[in-house]
Length: 442
Ligand code: FCB
Image 1 (cartoon, protein in one colour):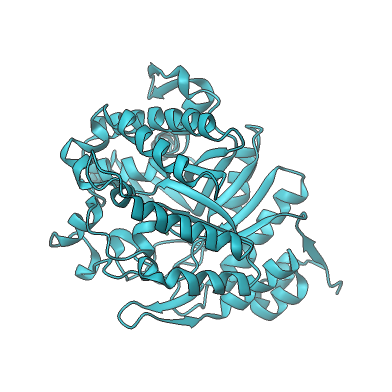
Image 2 (cartoon, helix red, strand yellow):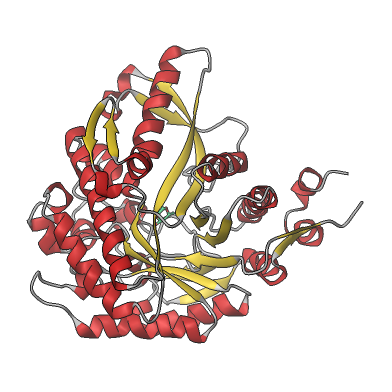
């Protein structure tokens, strides 16, 4: 058996991704904090609380862990409600804190990628109507200008908005995120404002920092019709794909927002991506279901043969990752995988998930598609939004009560990949032997 090595290009970014509210702790001035206080909103009544205590300083030890295991980049987000706690007050201490963290990354040899909006909004913004109010475009732009001006010496890779499609779907259609609405029209309005806000931020960042590389992070979920022969299953598949995967991105490509045949011109959004950020987790099957009227008659399930994660939240479908990369590369911009990972407290599934996804990534890189980096979600277990602490995505485990970290086997697996800048036969043999013959056929 040849001991092949799937090599990645020199300078490839290997990192993990985190988000402010999920790791910082003690964020009490945003909509998620308020949401956590409401009964029944978060699984098991969990709260973010101290989270991973990054605001208390534990970012240092966690970034040390990242470095020790061969990572050369990290993606984090900054918290709007800390930097601008009220509309007319900017908190220089908060900005200093982020400067310190970003400097800490550079000192450790980690290339920083900074997300400006990762799901959370200041309470004062929500009181103004949040992302449904058109003023949000200018308000977000002011926040971006102030933050990028303050942090430009420390970072030049920016993600404007993380998963706008999840934000407007979960907050305004499915209702699991604040503000918990079920209103398609509001969702479309929010999407439109997010497109305008992204475009404004793109131009503002470039004005402040001409060398900046700016994109947004798309949550791409592959959809397949459950019964391929069924026109109804195919129709809901098309709708889900259009609404979740295509609407935001297409508007940035064409300058026209197409909502099921109704067009809005947003010319300033055209060509506002220096790279495409891809968050890929899974692939679902779509079925038309009369009982799912609240979800546009769409019922989702997972392919029967796919391995499911601990709580059934994700299915392991690595081919969907390759499919996403193949779709996005046609746009002709560099791609950065801004998230990919699986919840798995026992670490039984993660090694297989990881090697199979890295293998698909390598196939894409080997075809000379412009893929610049991979950020695994996540470094340490953290607060998983409406699923609270019930899902564990960390390479390192965390007991949030004691703040004790523990090393999962996947730490060493990912370290081998990062150190070698490759996925090798030996690594797969050691950590996921069950897929060895699939990944390295004789
Ligand atoms: C993504 C989010 C991220 C994390 C992962 C598991 O949708 O961007 O914050 O919750 O899912």
